[in-house]
Each structure stands twice: as C-alpha cells, then as structure tokens.
Image 1: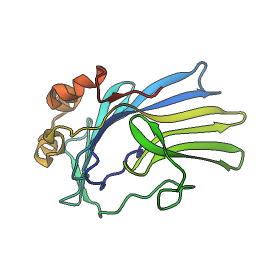
Image 2 (image 1 turned 135 degrees about the vertical axis):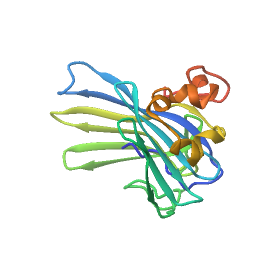
Image 3 (image 1 turned 90 degrees about the vertical axis):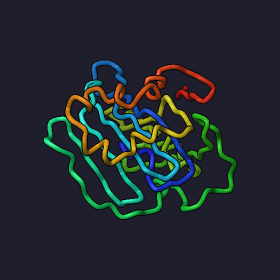
Length: 203
C-alpha cells in the first residue's frame, strides 16, 4: 500500500507523509509508524523517501518526462535506473473508472469518495480522491488478526521544491545525503511539522 499517490497526474501537486497504524495480534499495543514521505509536482513526477524505524533507507523518483524510475538505497553504491512507461492513474479496485455521481466528502483538503467491500473475511474501507489520484485512507479489518490503517497525513497541496525532482541530484546522492535528506531538501520539508493554512492533518 505504499503507492497511495499516483504519478503521471499533472497540475495537482501534493506533499504528504504516509503512516501505517496497526492494532493486531502481532502488536502488543496499537502502533503508528512513518512509512514514507512523498512529493508530486505539477508535471506528475513523484519523489518518495522510504523509512524504516524512522530512518530514511531509500529514495525513489519517477521522472515522467524522461520515463525513468530511479532508486537509491542507503546501502547501495549508486542509484539504479530503469525505464517506466507513462500510464494514466486508475482508481483502486471497487471504484468506477470515472468519478461517481454521488457528492464527494472533503478529507485532508481533497474531495474524495468512499467505498467499502469484503474480500473473504476481510473488510476493507477506502477513501479515494479522483481529482488528486490519491488513496487518502484505507482501513483493513480481519477477524482474529486485527486492524491495519494506511493513511496520508501532514498534507500540503502546493508545489514542492524543484531540487527533489532533479535526476542529477539523485545520481549525485551519497549515503550521507540520504541520511540527511530533509536538510539537503531545505526548509520546505522541515516545515511539514508545523501546521499552517495549507496544512491538513488526518483527524
């Protein structure tokens, strides 16, 4: 569920954090952990920093113009590049291809629609924004196992720094830069921890 925000969607910039909340038989008490931080610019490029135990472990960049997928792991010698075909985003399973006629609700500053479905014993609830090509929240409940929630948080609907989408910057990255990715990216992402007029939190 890491791909909550789709690339290739133009003119809908977004910056957000992805959290996973678990209350299951595998967790002695409810937990909430940071999975990744992401940014999509107006061109549809998608930049993601993945975390493990709150430490950045990899950076990925989908470069729409050059049809490139770039991955940099902190334990790797250099980034890995591969071709990625441009593809329009599609709604998650259970949602029609086009926005339904029922009025959307507003969540995290984005219009979205809700759908719930059962997959065997599992119940899944999803809030999806057609306009932003983003799954805002998904809740999975499985009897005998527990509840898992994937959700966006710390959302800003504004253009992220151009530096994040520079292939040259990614290719020049070293482990030290990745470990200090927010310092390298500048004050923009540091401000994600401060609420403002365009800052949306998951209630």
